[in-house]
Image (cartoon, rainbow, N blue to C red; front, side):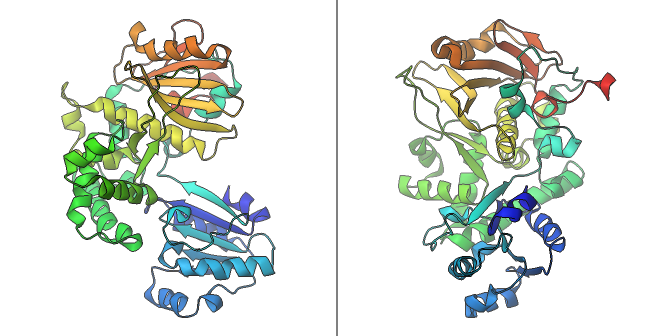
Length: 411
């Protein structure tokens, strides 16, 4: 995707959380270019040079990689001048651990000259070498298309959610070593990443907020309620949430509404971008998750929404992600709206069995949308694909990364 962008775009920005492989990917791309140069702003000498003479720092005839550009946003205006003077594609490859367009006091952020690629922690399809094509598939194929049987059970899905998608966490053994990674990640996030882009006077408040968000993952982002739990003024909490979204730790999923109903609420839903990190923040472990009272439902919902959100960064179909809830407590965990107006609804259930009542929210959408309602799915932790009426199906949660793969006998 980045190589395609560099072929016709002057500046390509790879944004994403720390430890997701941005620098590795960018370096690999750069070494395949003609006359490349790589500059890393986590090197004190390089950062000092960027601050001392930003115009000279960005001058290069070939492809120039600047890693962690958020450390020196003053480089963006000289880059703008360079690409306006010489509009050849493939001039700059920038990486950042913050959403550049959201940074306060940022100079003109190269409008019309850039393409941004958002890099998330690894998806399940990337880990398992599966197609990861659920979003495209449900908008381009018939709902009755068959899916190969799935052998995963509830415990398997919980283990995957707790593993998360950070490459370093995946490589480590479950338990103490993986927990050490997550603990170090949280410390570095608060003491380094957030403080690079904002003045956080009391880091302990940010740590407490992360734990509260994780305990509410998959829930509504009711600012007043969260502020009360954390003990922060509402304005401060809103600022902290913005910062955590800027550094790709949380994502706010906007509420979906239609003029077909006036009872929809407008509050976004909060997820932790990596379910493994979220699980660590609430002290969840595979052993604790086996207790029938353990709150694995929100963890798996967060996990599923995260997988869908990842796919939207590479999907061919123009689809947006929402959630739905109304004042009568009718809700749908995931609403995917195509640019054509078609809608797919998805409910996520931690159970290994499906009941008719699990489709209540999906039927609500189907009744109100009519022909715009393309399909409704309940993703659960069982093995079978099951029909529950017209346009309604129960699917194993693994369909998020395996739907669209060739059947086993065709491989």
